[in-house]
Length: 531
Image 1 (cartoon, one colour):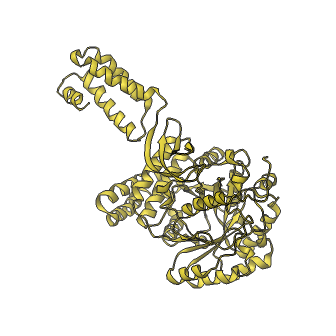
Image 2 (cartoon, rainbow, N blue to C red):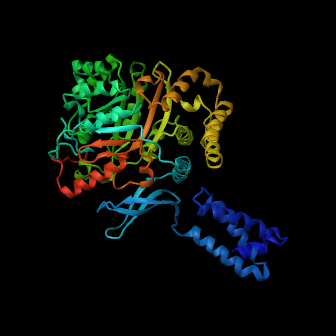
Image 3 (cartoon, one colour):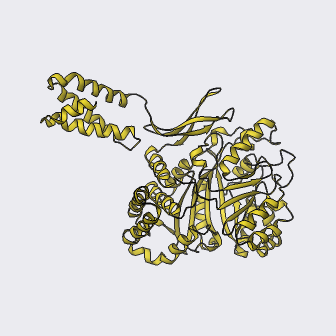
């Protein structure tokens, strides 16, 4: 091909040289995984094919090239976005994997020598996912220090959720000896400690450990099903102990769906818990598990609930796609799992003012900021931001910031990071945003934006998130089906547990635990029937 290109470069026939050069560039971009207009590529191929008929001695060689391009377009083809390591869905062993881009989807394709190939759908918007994937790895080239640790305080629970990631109450596992946490608290300051798994409020010493986390200069975050928080005196006890933020399981307002997911109708209990959190002014994040075909409509309903002025204590809503972990695998829910991409699709369809292009631009900018601050960030956790107007309405961050300029600033940051290093890249990012990213409407939110930027570098303590801001998250847990070793390196949470000890990547801890569950053969004690 180099010989053909060299020969054509010496010709003065633009009917040949022009389509060939454009076609050559387009094919190179296609093979590099870039977004290419396939219709335009086909038009160029046809133009070159027509011109080749008058190319004399070059006709055969040019037609062979056109046939190769035509074959590339005609077959169900894919481009490899990148190679990585995954886990086999069946035997859970490490396997070679590829992130593949097709015309209409992105998949994680894995090849197990024992069990054969398995495929995980990542996205039905290949342009969105491939662009974000490529950018993510451009700015996350280092293994940054961990700033957030899950502490699995107990493996028992006062619920028996069919979707329990921890597979609670299945094994006779003792509560975690927290001497490891004590050591961590003595060594680190300014990190977040997630007290969770399976239900930490079962432990009588929870208030004591909240006080210890706070006394050590770290952020105390509680993850709970909310049953005990429905009692005001208990919620007050945790508040007085100093809990910074509560992550509350809240899967929407459809109690029939709640029963499918959690084994019980919990709406009244959760609303009582929320009322107590509101009275005490405890910063709250709603964790909304979404299962395919069950409760997708709850995305918009929960979002609008959080924007109401009386709910300004709700600082964040995380929409979490159901995954095959723990009890969910035993319950046979494999056809109801979701990746963040599908959660985004549901949100943008239900809330047209939030556009996917804006979400991509926002996440590229957010990835750039976290890279500049050397903060770990998972590709499977994506974000957006809206501002409450105080009357129950809201406006997207795209009304406040010029996200197109922000995306350009993020792209420039990646270029500078690769060429000039972090210090100059970070300075350039700040300068670009100040010069181009602001709108006239920015000034009304400048203080809030500055506060959010400061929190990004200090652990994102939700209690300090401005009253007007509502953070949105779209997340999936890593299970054997979607596990990507390159993503797992940058998992935003480490873990301390009875079975795994200290692990710097929660994603790795998840799949290791699933392998142990599979080896033990123990099944969660309850089943459920699909709605």
